[in-house]
Image (cartoon, rainbow, N blue to C red; front, side, top):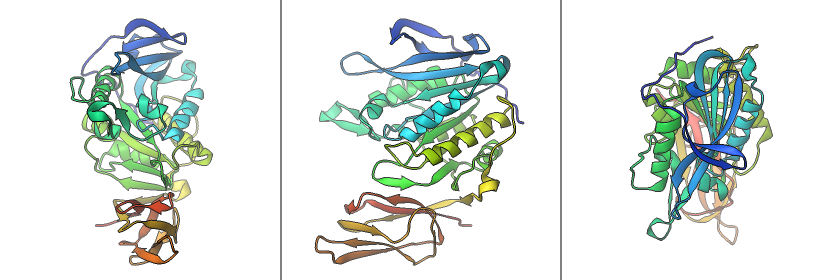
Length: 350
């Protein structure tokens, strides 16, 4: 068991707006320290305004333990088509009994509200006649930023995440048109993050130094151990991967002493593949894609992995793996425009 002391660099207090949505109170900021221990809570977090002046609201669930301890954050729905992430977090929260807990679990569900409503990856705005933004390239956001999603991220960061969380897991899936294994992005240089990753019974882990603008990287830069959990397919509930993600999440909560009980399966138990590089194969022209290997297949450098055919069925392109590794992501859309992702392969390099 590892214990972390709560971080409070910018103390806040809980502020209720006085509004209720379907009977659930709305907050403009939330301090878990203000909540009574041994209870569960549901609130809506008041996010950025729409162009009409109304707000986007983020559902938030809190299980505050009867005893003090760290505050673990579970974030889902940063991309709107990644619904397995939402179900995984719901299932973790459903298994928590605050009366038996030490510390707090805070879950933000469906963070990018307009993207969730349209089951699409990017946040659509009306600016410039219609512009979309990747909401996982904007963190930690800016409450006075130039775009609505940047301001939304800033509100969540300053008024929900940063003042409360000591550990975090950000749940995703691959975006529409592709498929993914059960996968972690984790900065394994961080001992706390490495230990978290080793507690997850996933297919693959990438040693990830971080990408600017992602929520995982913002957390780690702020001193909050975090990793990104990728739960397979978009736009549907991937039941098997969800169950394993829940098992890994509960392992992390047990590791930090938030809940008790024996650990479930871990990376060591399922033979997780670790790598530190991801080789991308992109289409060179348009055509219909035919995969020759699928997820989790081991490939050699130079091996044929996909073909592309024109409307007459002629092969117009052949794709080869640039590395020896294991397939992590494949395209599921058969029609493939030039520059589209065909496949990504996890590998290890010195």
